[in-house]
Amino acid sequence: ELRAELKDDQKFSEIYNFTFDWAKEKGQKSLALDTAVGMWQLLFAEKQWPLIAHWCQFVQERHNKAISRDTWAQLLDFVNVRICLICPVSTHDSAVLRVFPESLVTVLQHL
Image (cartoon, rainbow, N blue to C red; front, side):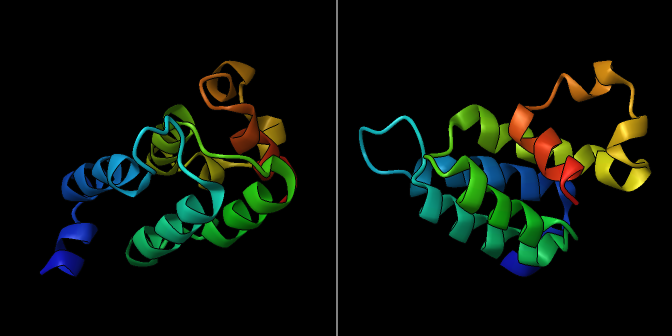
């Protein structure tokens, strides 16, 4: 039943947003990088976002620090917009890209 809920965009969003607070250490504002990567791999396995492996590799190799609530939330917005499937980053309007954290834009530029 949970797998079916993860396929529903609204339920997925609710579960995804809940996961940040559930998975972070008590008293911490950010989510440990290894924990975030593990949660993303679990959650996006059902969502089948084609860039999840690239994103996880990027944050581990280049970001290499805890994941803020903003980055966590904006990744889901980014996936939902499906900006990466529309066209290459170089052709996007810069105003569209400015709404996302630099790390998301950078990973697209390295694909």
